[in-house]
Length: 228
Image (cartoon, rainbow, N blue to C red; front, side, top):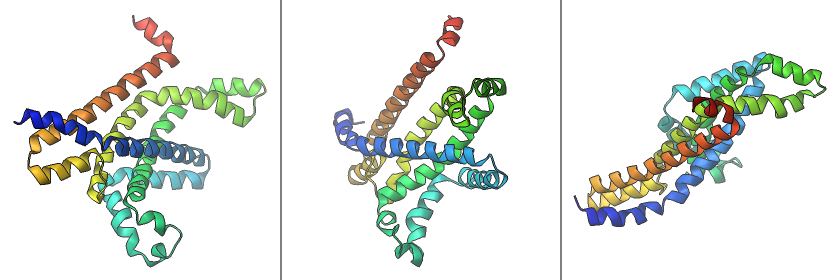
């Protein structure tokens, strides 16, 4: 094993870190917004059916298949190529981001759904009795409590999405994994290269785990104080 090459490789792979973080951040942001909208839609019968179907499709099929369907499949449709969406859908970056975002929305929707169900009805009723409007109850009471309840599960989704960004290398995007694959094709130092890439992902996962743990302690200091 060539350790000198292993050390020099970090710099090359880290050049793909901005793209990896960019995709993960915007996929999580868009997925959170769509997931929240899906939960709001569940308040009606039709909306609940649509949201349930959406979640079933995107959770029941592999992310790689979804990525290929958007990148390779949609351009086969004539009305897509002649629509205003074509300037976006012909770019690998936007196809990758849309696939990650739509997939994350399905999982985030279920995570938020569990958090919303954990909000005590008495708390919401007390907020309404105090004179808050429905929107105020949602913004000041329901969502903060639901977010706290969903945070442990959502932290796992953040890590999962970070690792899922590696799939965009299949559509020619040069993220960390894309650079690693290209380096392997050129040098055949597969062990050193993929070990280095794995360590970078492992370090990022550790940072996310620590950060979410800190947020949990900040939001619920009494729970962690009781354990000590």
